[in-house]
Image (cartoon, rainbow, N blue to C red; front, side, top):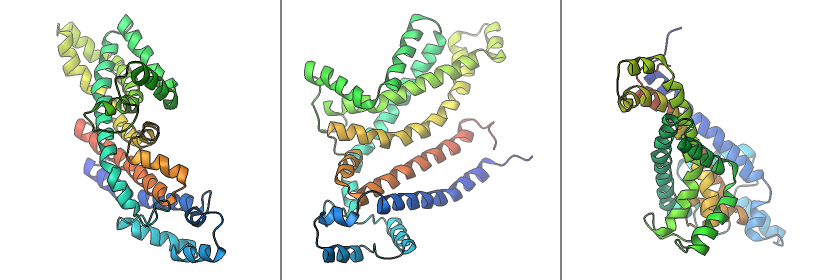
Amino acid sequence: MPQKSASTIIIRRLLWLPVLLILISLTVFLFGTYGPGDPVLVRLGSKANPEAVERIRAELGLDRPLHEQYLRYLWNVIQGDFGESTYFQGQLVTDLIAGRLLVSLQLGVAATIIVFAVGIPLGVITAALQGRVWDRLIVSLTLIPESVPVFIIIPVLYFIFVRQLKWFPASGWDGLFSPSAVLPLIVLSIGGIAGVVRQVRTNTLEVLHNDFVRTARAKGLPPSTILRRHVLRNSLLPTWTMVGFVIASLPAGSIIVEGLMGIPGIGGLAWESIFRRDYPVIMAITLLGATLYVIGNLIVDIGYPLIDPRIRY
């Protein structure tokens, strides 16, 4: 069976992208429009006049057939219009998100860099020191963030670093390079670091037991040279798949972190909107998060042949 070129598979992925986004937008629309709670009663209150309810329902187009509502919503989204917030009446959802986007972007990019900058070296070190004290200690520590929920980790960190040591503020945001960013970055990156360490350690150990590594050792090459030339490239390739998962998991993690830590980002906005049942905002953030997930996986697919030209689809 002939192998497809990388450009062919990339074009195919790009062609599927709008199809996936349309399916995601349809799912988000159905859950947002027909989920728990009436969006009109959320805006007017449960004791609203029936005539006012019908008038607002007509103004929002909720009295029209389902396909008309969806096509109208999709067309507006394509133009960057996510409608008006039901809680902040008269305020566009796009403006609410734009005002908080920079904070979440800073946190997300910084957390992603920390995950791989810390996780990859630790994974290689634990593989090189397999069975020794440092290997067992690091592997044991990586089990903690994977077994303890974030809503338990956050209060523990608060008690130690905010209440007892008083190193960091209790909440708020003063910029990425301020003490207020330290605890959110720790919570956002700690789970990803644990996953990368375990992945890199496993991959590195598999490569270390290959014949070409034994041959390099028999030739008398220094361990550092063997690691750099023969091990890292082969062991780090599978780790590339985690880039998409790390990027995709950040929006969900930021909702809890920003919500509990009082950070004015998109995650904090989503947290507040859930309690306010502000459906237009929730739909917009969900759609953006799902789009980020799809694009993250697309980047992973495109990156494979660029990292290792031997890969063919």
